[in-house]
Each structure stands twice: as C-alpha cells, then as structure tokens.
Image (spheres, one colour):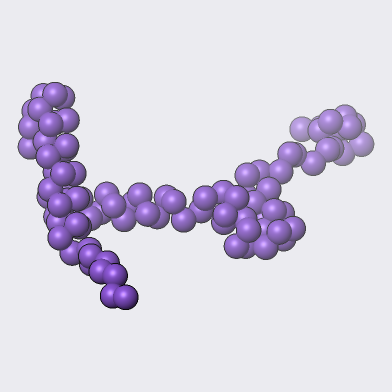
Length: 96
C-alpha cells in the first residue's frame, strides 16, 4: 500500500458524484417537487400499482405454457381489468 506522500494527484482526487449525490444536489437546487417532475418520480409507483392490481385480481402468474398463449392470456386479462375499471368509473352528466 502506498503512503499518502507517494500517491498521484489522480488517486487523491475525489471520485465523481454518484447518482444519489446528483439527485440530492438537484433537490437542494430546485426543491423536491420540481425534482419529482423532472425525474418523473411518481410514474414508477403508478406502474407498480397497476401490476399489483393485475396480479391481485387475475393471479400472480400466467397459466399458459407457450409464449403466444401467454401473450393472449395477458391481453385477455388486461381487457378484463380495463372493463372492471370502466364499470366503476363515474359517467359525467351535464346538468345545465
């Protein structure tokens, strides 16, 4: 192991900031809400919620064995899920 006195300048330089450090810096500069808009922070949770809903209603795995049949099964499942969501969605009615 080299002593501090024999280290090169490159070895003494700080490593580049990590992704986490860059995010923390950006939050400090612009604020948390602007950072969330820039990085589309909430989109992942919406996708995870949709998958959890699909698995909870239709089951945690596909029953078909072959890829074409699995794709068809998934399409049918998504269609069923969309139909259920549409059934629970209110229909706007103009009153004036």
